[in-house]
Amino acid sequence: MPITEIIFPTFKSNLTKEAHAVAKTAFTAIKGQPGLLHHRIGRITREDGKPLGEEWKSVLSLEWDSPTAFHNIYPSATIFQEVMKQVIPYVAAKATPLLFQPLPPSSLSTHTTSNASFPNPPHGATQLFLRETGAGSDGGEVKTAWAELVDAVNAEGKDGVVGEWEGEGIENAEGLWVGFLGWKGGVEVCFFFLLLSFHIPFFFFYFFLFACGWGDWLT
Image (cartoon, rainbow, N blue to C red; front, side):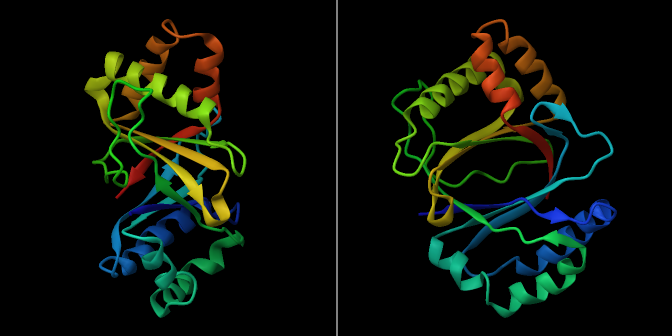
């Protein structure tokens, strides 16, 4: 089963833009490694509902065909060490990868979610939702809210949507839930959530829009 790896690096505050460019170049070295489906690095443009402006924050996402493929590279493989040699001078604190496995199609939604990894979208915006469910929890409340959101997306904003995906944390990320919405661009995201706010309870709108942020994924 494919898994999704997410990394939120913490770069030195005076080098964030330069660090993003270095990381983008450095991580191309792992392209073609056994088990790697695709990877991307994005700049977060909004976080917790607030625009970041000129501030640079990065997020990396890698798709593997299995947890074994991930562990064959991280943290000891030579190729990984070579990548890190380029990035470490810009790092302010260690970032631990978070691993997620896809959730099966939800019976709560009229839309059938693929259980494959999140597809590598074309240039546009990817909205990322991250939520704690607690170790051992089935995350029922979050899954229900996500199913309602996906249905609303398909009813109101489908022309701008590239794809959607949800997963549950495994290994060190157990107790976390993640959801992705891919969009053709940031304009569609803003328009859709403005429209959606008139159709669903405000607390639901607040939960999703302000619990997380979206960014431009650079492939």
